[in-house]
Image (cartoon, rainbow, N blue to C red):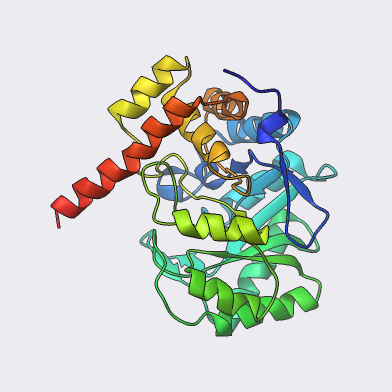
Length: 300
């Protein structure tokens, strides 16, 4: 079954007049293998970005530590001067080690440098949204975020950052952050198989705050499920289209940012926004998370 709403409809960012199509694009895979160095086909990456924008995408998620510096430079080469209405969301709080590791970068100097790196490599004077990334690689960990978030709030007052979001955080950290500055989005690990944030998604929806799941298709370990495949066959779609459609139907505040370096996969991903899953398919997909959770507990 299909629906006519373009790219999943729109969501207006909390406290702004900015409406984003709910199907966006995540730029991490524009870099080379292991998100390191340039891609094998830079021209292909440029063409992919240009097709995404031509299809209506107005929300790109990136970071200057992808590559590092690679994805932002490709975005600038492909799209600068940027079309009206394009919203680029980036993040700071991490850096890449020389061994390709992912390291925290939460000191005042690192955060300020990170914002300026993004500005320079994207070729802009102010960043639409900067997410402060804390926690681990995949999951948040409790602890105060006051010190690093205060730095971003200062940069916002200076006009270098328009809006602030959080990544890899807990509900308690969101509450702390909201006492420091307005938070327009939360970006955490979430998909139909990994749903620890179910209650968080719903709480954010009540506040009108966007929830942006990273690794919506599983990330480095792509989603695999016989039940997902069965549902996909029943609605004549691909498994990944069904996984994205499930997210869009899960809650109206969810914005998706699937990433790919393939034009065919980009087209498939965008096509998921037109897929309307029937109630029996939703019920079957909801059960996948319980199966994954039970399997995880049995191996502990």
